[in-house]
Image (cartoon, rainbow over all chains, first blue to last red; front, top):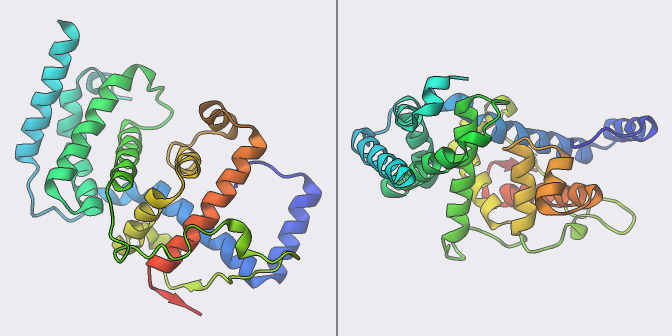
Length: 74
Length: 190
């Protein structure tokens, strides 16, 4: 998952994963966690609109950013 | 990369604020906290925009910052013991295997479609909360790798560790995280 293994190690692991259902399950679950945390913002666009509007927070946040920019330029 | 929006944090808020807010609200379930986290995200992005190299989209970059903030938020929040079952969370990863390498605590089967895992609110909530409960260095290594997409070399530089240390930390982080999710997200079958 993090670096390329030497060929013989890769083959040994591949063989073991074919024989051991629990290690294969473990691997699948790690890959699922990886995919979930990396891809979740892809579904963010489909999030149902919240009951809470962003209009007021939007203006407050913009004002904070303006204040911060003003501080930097002073 | 949109050069206009990079120069204008207010344009970021217009373009991405709503979606970041809804995402944060879904995670933390508190309107005021969600607003704070989104604000902190934009402030951090404003400070770091010169370092944004454009390897990912602006949206991905902003989401990565927000995810960091959410995890830090959960880490700083105190939970009742009854709220999150941390029964096994302190155990070392060595306890999962016997001395001869056999499984001691078998991974159970998860009833979840891997394609849709990130759409399952309970699953993702368990994931974030488990991340926040993990030993800090392990969580950092995991987040740098999986959210920020840093290479082993880059993680080693940031954490001042060797490559071997890094791989061990990532392995332990994943073992602990997987087990914590399994305990705290109940859709398992034997």
